[in-house]
Image (cartoon, helix red, strand yellow):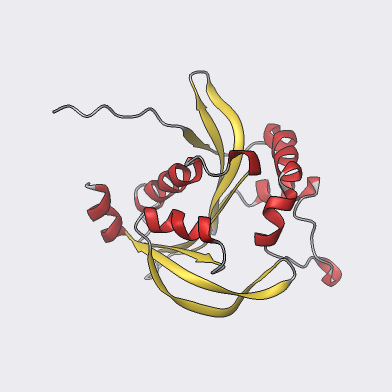
Length: 193
């Protein structure tokens, strides 16, 4: 029996300066959708950065490909190459040495939510993490009330490891997070390679 492969719905691309207008527009139109889950980052002088301002893209771009982070834009797949921008996937806090681990982060624009795009995008990011990047472990830290995000990592085989109280400052307050993880061995067993 031959199983037909479904064409990819999304692609991951490395960001460039040309992506700024679309990125800023998508984030702004999805602000109300994203704000409850956005980390609060204090800049100079203890003032929280506006994660939706134009200069947020500049910070994103400057950290897109470093030893500590790999950040990708998620675009709809297109026969012509780069389709419409719909979100972002990041591998953050990459630790090498004996650890070989990264923290996964992702978001999708409001009008693209619930279509399976981010499941595919995170699957692509995991393939890179466990493939060319040669990481051993990927973690996703998720607010327990974020059921869509919990369901996404569950679909991809991540395991719930526990609860980290007041783990990350989100929407201006320290919030508990569930720690979900996946190792290279689990990925290989699940992915069949």
